[in-house]
Length: 154
Image (cartoon, rainbow, N blue to C red; front, side, top):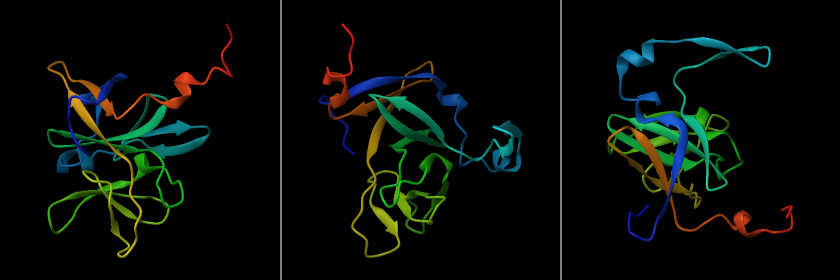
């Protein structure tokens, strides 16, 4: 994940820095709220946020003053990474643990941390936060879907 002038930053709509669950805050970890989701009771704390930017679903996680962005789909088998736990590893790096098979991916590099010996990388994105807490996700290029004219009505 490199930050440079060649990134294209897309704003995140309807979500600000302070809206994100802070995984470093032990007090927040003790607060649990529930809500109905399609007839099921769901815990509404201790999760990342899922947003769409540049026609891509992205999972956002906050840890202290940093925001991390990773492609929503686990590169192993497509699990929903926004529902994964954030863990601090012994080397003090942060990873997201996929809720389906417990694969762990470094939030800075996207490299798989567990299981060992795997050569899969999650796509990570830079995130900028402005003074008002508005979030911007950086991409290398525009989504190719923006240029697909087959589905467009003129």
